[in-house]
Image 1 (cartoon, rainbow, N blue to C red):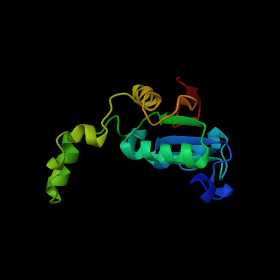
Image 2 (image 1 turned 30 degrees about the vertical axis):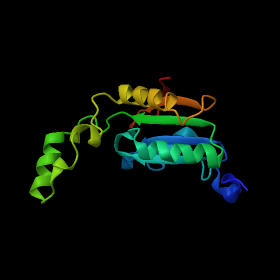
Image 3 (image 1 turned 90 degrees about the vertical axis):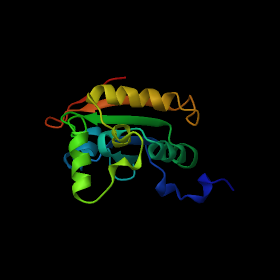
Length: 156
């Protein structure tokens, strides 16, 4: 019995889609509605700034090899807080609260600081397409949603 066979059919996304998006609260219900997604249609992976991290890649590997995902969509959005995040201010706040922000050699990279939402999505698409664990037959696309209008633009 394969790993995928041990997972019930209802756990597999009906549209064979994985969506990587931001954890922004303005996207809750809004993004699925604008993408035409209903419960059970897609695996949705959220993090600050829809940054492609090792955890995201691990989740994609599970989605592809165990849950039959055939398509990945990275969905960035306008007015993303990570594009304007002040890394030094975050570091100062951590210190004020008794946390040592020097637990990692490159705090800015660990935080996922970005300068441009669209460039971040395009970079993520390239990272996924070129990752050795992602098969070439999996479609990867990059999208941007306007946080105010809900208009979705395909970048790649």
